[in-house]
Amino acid sequence: MFYGEHEHTIDRKGRLIIPSRFREAMKEHFVEHLVVTRGLDKCLFLFPEDEWKAQENRFRSLSFTKQEARQFNRFYFSGAAELSFDKQGRILIPQYLKDYAGIKRDVTLVGVSNRIEVWDKEAWQKFYEQFKPSYEEIAEKLIDG
Image (cartoon, rainbow, N blue to C red; front, top):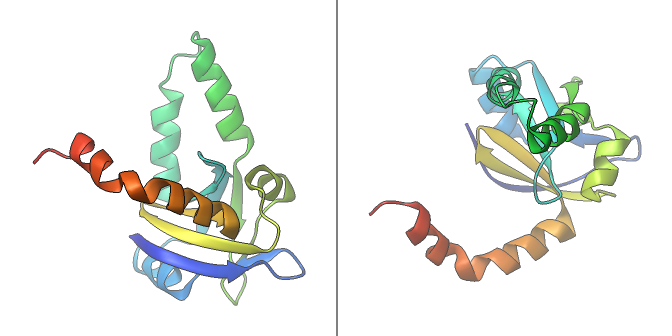
């Protein structure tokens, strides 16, 4: 559903416009709200409602008797917030999530199939440059030939 990289800026009121390509994909799938939470690698994860429910079910099934499961679920779900779009396709990301991801103004939105990742622009560039040399090696390990 979500593919590509898009650079945007958070406006003075803290709003972020969702790229039109992503908004079109959401219209096609009848998505009216997104859920944002703390992602991995210091980015934010944005999920459509149905995908969020799938994630919630998956993580809810982790045993609460295991310390790591409790810790992960606390951190992941305590950061979650439901977001609505304004008429211009903008969302307002809570400040505590922007602080977590180190987001000030310039961001890169990355489509990762079932979710959108929101990165501080410099953090994305750093991650990309660090990961790029090992891309093929990792693909060989993960993908059956």
